[in-house]
Image 1: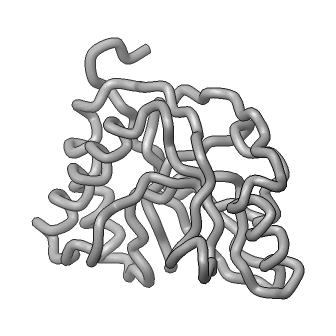
Image 2: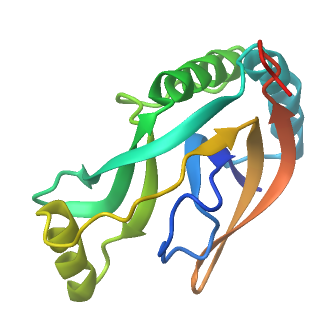
Length: 174
């Protein structure tokens, strides 16, 4: 199963062209066999449970690998960025204890808006990155859990299914 750990942010990103619901990926796992899936399910709850629920708000637009050569256009996290980084660190540490090496590079909290695959996408990316297209105001969402999701690739992009949710139970949890 192709899987990742992330935060659902339904309602916070309008106009996303990806068929999967808007989400923030905390850690992409790739292909995971049943034994690996059980290891993930065992180590993630104690890693994320101490984190308190928090508000997440989106900020400016950016691109990977760069604004000059965009392949992925995204919005960064404005509100809740420290909490998102903490979750990513806790998840990385927990996964390292059961054999997943850390991902290379710095974790950048973001929500993918679209992938740049065509000339039309390049124009959209340039318009957003250069400020010719205004950013939509998006609501702040309350983050209460981390989701383990299956990601199936299809002809129209990825389709996601929640396998398990791990609640945030820190101070102030509902």
